[in-house]
Image (cartoon, rainbow, N blue to C red):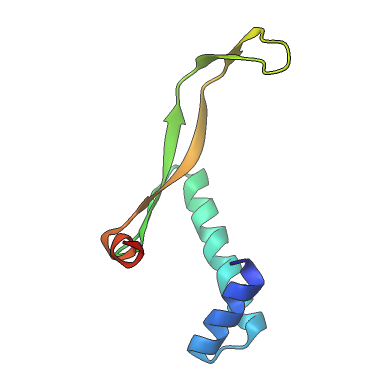
Length: 90
């Protein structure tokens, strides 16, 4: 499901216009992104938690040449599904 489809589904369920539902989705993703940039977790009870995960520096291989390379440490966003979401997909 892409953003326009999600906005249409939210609009149908809530009575909002599609444009207003799209604004709500944009505001939600902006707030999750801002929290991640501050290093904060975002927890939606029953749905899941977005959190920052650190990756250690590691050795890898260039797939074209086979040469060994050093992959630097980095941060990424992870998602852990909550109990309610897990039950719905089981």
